[in-house]
Length: 397
Image 1: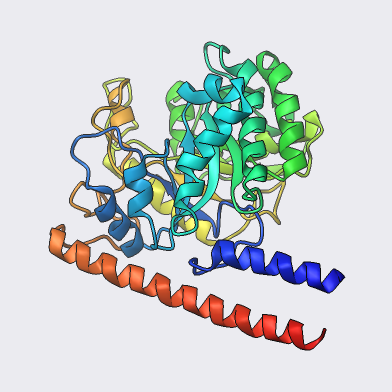
Image 2 (image 1 turned 60 degrees about the vertical axis):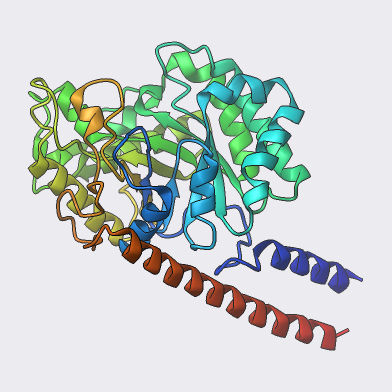
């Protein structure tokens, strides 16, 4: 009987994933170490189907979006790209108010696109805690729990991971890293949120920008330290660790804060990091050369698949911000100039991976057909392999 139940569970997972090149045995949103944020606050970027082709040409598999736009989800269908969708801050109160509201949202924006679109995660809100107003702090955990409850009811909790991204504003005393704790103004919301994430196996997601840290104190921070360039770095005497780049130091500061709060084993994933290529007069470090240097060195750093000094066995994972410049974003000029690619699919600057040479609709559509054909081949391989395993299991009854 026990083997019979195992077989039923196996068949269920197979049904969930039979159209995917890779079977998802657990809710893990990030495969590998490199991903990218696909923001769309712009009027001059390519359509989602062309973006899919660009991502495949650049060999970028992990993608985050900030909503659950159905045009994007449809374009990603059958492509093999792993997608994290966003439940925007504006929806948090509604989803917190009722489990039914959360269930409707998940049905409409996640379940209805699976398994063809590989939705691997839901980011519930973005930088909610640590904001100038903690208005949404009290509803974040309720929204997270209701979304997770919806996934369980739909038997998707082992396929789709729940997270929320934090800015470094939630951290206090992050220099040196060994002194870091969570800010007092987020404590009442952070600890219960982390307890729930620990229970369901979710990571701590951090938006970390050495660019912004350098801008805040250029007189005392070596720009080479922020750019992964050769530098003396900093020495953390308490932990007896020398840091040769700022990003590692920020991540280890976060690990220290987590350990102080009682969550030593929780993984930290960087959900946003990047460097602006253009800025206002008070953003002198926002140059093409610096953006190229940061993103090129970051890509090399991630390719090493190594951890930080305090967590050497946890390979650093990061989503780069961002795919394109977004000309409709508010704020300083730098906010509109983080993109790695131009609207025609060519690189804004060379950081070591290929870009599309042509932006013609015909060539992009042709490439997309090839990509989807390959995804189908991958699905058939999974099905054939699974069939063989099933026959073996049956032979043992």
